[in-house]
Amino acid sequence: MNDEVYDDMALEQNAKALFGKQLEVEHVVARRVPVSHTAHGTVFLTAKKELMVYLDGQTRFLLDDVRKILTRMGLVAEFYFPPKGKPHYFDEVALAKYSVVYPGRRNPSDQDLEYYRGLAPYQPALVQILEVRDSNIYQFDTDSKSGWRPVVKFAYRRIKTS
Image (tube, rainbow, N blue to C red; front, side):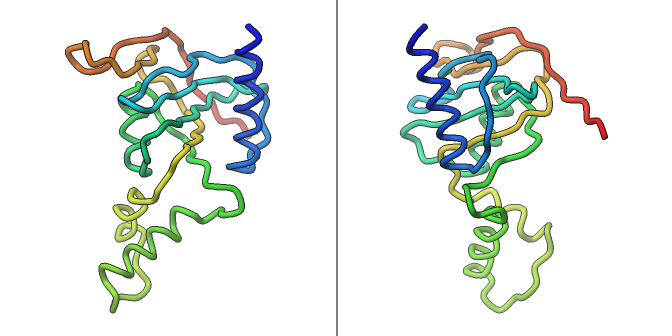
C-alpha cells in the first residue's frame, strides 16, 4: 500500500516535471502493466475524472509506437501531451524531418507532415484517453495467441461539455 502511494506521487511529479501538467491521481485503474518486453504503462483517473496513461520503460518510443500501443491496449487517445516548454514539439520535429527529406520544399501541408509527426521521439509518454473501446484494458502477454490479454474491465467514455 505504501509503495502505491509513492508510485502515485512519482507519477504526479513526473507529469509536472516532464510535461508541465498539474494533475492529481485519484484512482489507478491498471498499475505498471506490460506494454512490450521492456516497457510498462499505468492507466489512472485524475481528480477531474480524466483517464490518463503514462508509458515508460527502457524502450525508446516514437509517437507512432505510442499510438500502436494504445490501440492494442484498447484505448482511444484524445490528446498526446508534448514535453514541458515545447507546445508545438510534434510539429517542430515533423517539420525538421520533412526538411531533411525534402530540402527544397517550403510550407508543407498538415497531410505532408502527418507521417513525420509519428517519427517524433516520445519517451516517456503521457496521453489523455477519450474512451476504452470494448470495456477492457489489455496488457502485453507473449503466451497469448494475439499477444495481448485483458488485464482489467473498465468502462470509460469522455463526454465533452461546454
